[in-house]
Amino acid sequence: MASDQNDTKKLRQESAKTDPVTKTLAPSARSARTFMLGIATTGGPRLLAFNVANLLIGRLPDNHLALNHGSVSRRHARISVTNMGVVLEDLGSQNGSTINGKPVKGETPVRPGDVLRIGYVPVYYFGFIRTDDPPTVEQVEGAINLEPSAPPI
Image 1 (tube, rainbow, N blue to C red):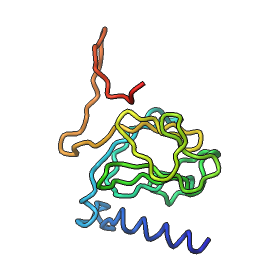
Image 2 (image 1 turned 120 degrees about the vertical axis):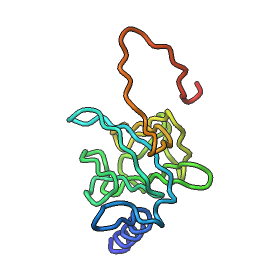
Image 3 (image 1 turned 180 degrees about the vertical axis):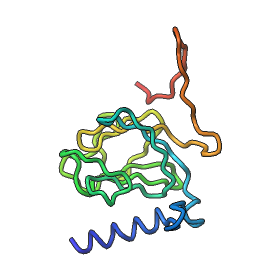
């Protein structure tokens, strides 16, 4: 357990070094690209942008993304930005992780439009965003015709 805590502490330090005063990312951590996730919460839908190379997900509050749900393990999964793209890795959780319903084995690529399940919690991956020009909400009155970016069927 001490080894697990040390590994997690080291990962958090490497991936989310922040200035304690401004709470902004330190220059060395800014190299990670910003990606967006969507999560349905009891308070309504949340769109979250993360600028970290290794996003830790779990039930404990010291994870980057703490999901307070019984199906989520204390240290459940990790989303990493690599040279090959974004990957999801299950960290040996009790209830597993899936991408579009398929179990995650090792580092598994994630693409925009994918639905990740962390335990029983759905997390929607939207891909990279530009923080200087973030997505805006469009109010639709009537109908709209879109070409979605979705996994092949």
